[in-house]
Length: 156
Image 1 (cartoon, one colour):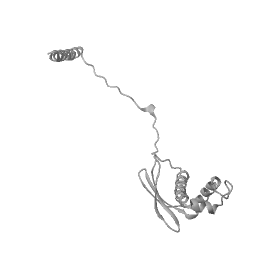
Image 2: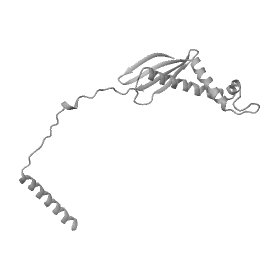
Image 3: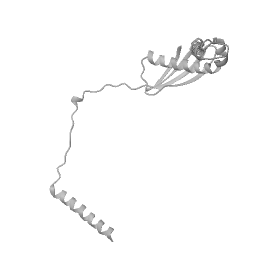
Image 4: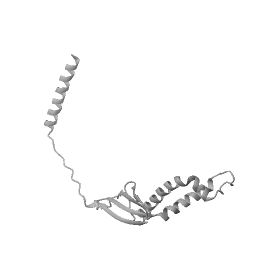
């Protein structure tokens, strides 16, 4: 695994990573061994089917799955090695595949880091307004009058 480039824009990060073909082949071999333990085939005892036979039967599907597994394992390793905490899952896109290996792009967003301030220094001010009793009674009387006029209109 080799990190080719890193770009950042605020909390967004983008890494271009190269995985060697040997790493992908190692993951593929592990998956084929797991499958070989479970395969039942005529002429062989259960779990004793040779790897080359298993590779002929399941090689193509295991290759695609092992590429994705190698990419996911590499992405998780990068995040843990650099101690990055991400807000959502990362997104990976394969950029190119060649003799060197698989180059992929990994995009993610970081969780912002911040420190809490000392809340004991904050003052809370509660604003109050004194309303004279005459204004309160005047407003209540206006509400009563408007309610009466509406109720008489509804009865008609």
